[in-house]
Image (cartoon, rainbow, N blue to C red; front, side, top):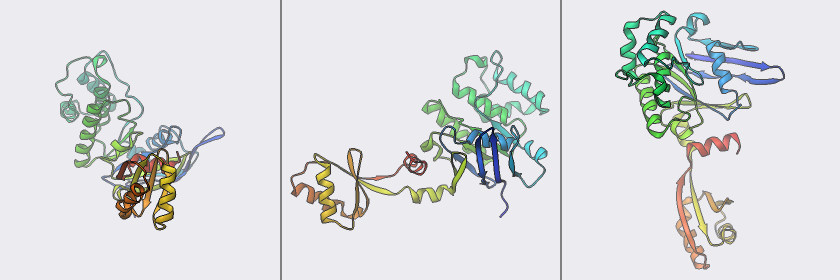
Length: 294
């Protein structure tokens, strides 16, 4: 299968530290690819390798199955925080970057409209963090890229700013732009991502689609009583087919959820006070934390 972007046994080593260790990622055209991992997992290093900001120690990067220098002109990016001219307007920022990149200044208003900054006349120093991130995205759009790489683009944004940024990404994706996005806000990322890669200590643990993730975020039962240890013992004694364990301040049922009603009757019959009995669905964040190891 031919991928839009892929890496082959990619390695980046700094002195004695291997930041990216034999990583093979696969991004299809039209994807919103979410790159997940803790701080220090190698996410930013990997994104910089894709952009040519760092040279790999070994391995290879395939971009659109074409020569890398030409391919990278088809990629826009926002790595860390955007470098902006803070004493001028969004339009003036766009004009300066358009001249720098050799782009058509006549496209500026169209791009600013895409990121909801067209009628903003204040200097950038007065912008909120969300507005600065949207302007950074607008700058990434100057050369009409086919792929945009974003490193923690919603980190620090308030809920309204996250929603606005998410809506812009979805709209651009529908227009044909492929995205690679790293983020710590996993539940927010899950609202737009179509496929995932999990990085840990420089290694790619696995890749899967958003559809596959939904099947992995399984249902479970949560039970809280006035004596959870006794409740767990009673469940194990009377329901051998039910998989139960102590989890923090509650008893967790991972298999045999159809028995929750009968379990409740058993606990009450044994004079336990059941303060909570809930059927829950594992969140995206819980799934990833489980894969990365809490």
